[in-house]
Length: 273
Picture 1 (cartoon, rainbow, N blue to C red):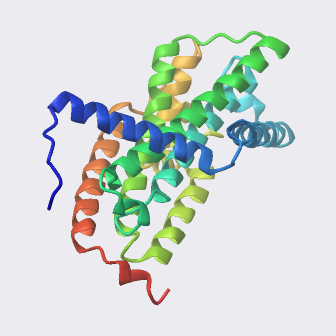
Picture 2 (picture 1 turned 180 degrees about the vertical axis):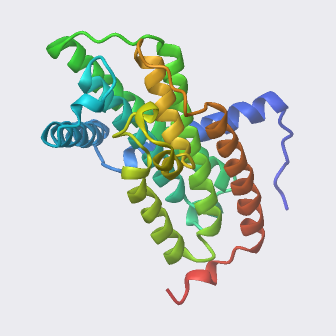
């Protein structure tokens, strides 16, 4: 009643929003562990462990001959990095605070800022982890060469973006049926261990097997990413456009669903849970 309303310019509002996103992103990055460095080391260890497991699996099953000609470990890491980025982005967005969260009681905060912060926090962690792992592999074991680094980074970001889009669809449905959505998200992430196609080279797959992976945007980004990484590989059965279309469609559906959910959200939804 006695508060004076201060009109802010568009630039000042934008700067304030960016500052809010920055602080929310820092909070999300530190959420996994009180010590940010230990949290990053845990993520690096998880990435390295997955690379070692798949390297040994390829070696024991005799699948090294099916890989792309070039650095075999770089071939394995290319699939693991993009898979981890996609899965972590989706998981972070699904776990983002929704319209019924106590954080939304603070006036500058809103679900879009929460989603943006979760997505950016995930991207920061994965870029840093991938960079550290590649640097140590390059410096200690053998020098690596990436044919088109810009294209490779574009596919890395597209893997992240498609994960964010799919996560937004799950997040919009989460307040209505939290248990069902959490199970569906877990099934999708577990299925991507195989359905992402990171263990296969798309050009060598027969037509009936391509149909099992072609629906997955991550399959396309991994295959196209390998085309940018390796000089002697040109992907013929994957597309850059498809994951872009999927990402845009999922983001639009997620935004519409989130807006509808926000209008009908109630703190009593989870009273019986």
